[in-house]
Image (cartoon, rainbow, N blue to C red):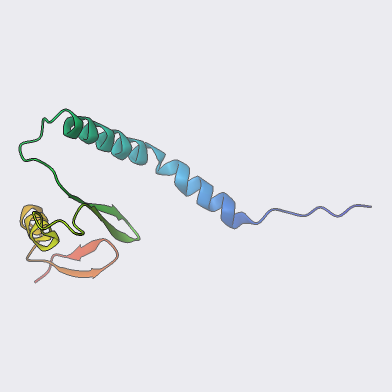
Length: 104
């Protein structure tokens, strides 16, 4: 008689989570593609020489950048400061993950 081996539940749970987030991932990818089209068509207000992107999830944030290494015309610190000014979250302290404590 043969023995039936059950697949582990972890990969299945991971696949279910990926499927739940698929709509948001597609929306984000479409937005990035449209941004690339604007850059290629020279429809951006400032001439882009470098880029910094923050990918956020419930597990945390990931900062990606390109074009800053060896390019004296752009400054990564200045880009980070500009991003910080536009978020309007300077008064909240980070607790962990992607959540902010709004009680001062």
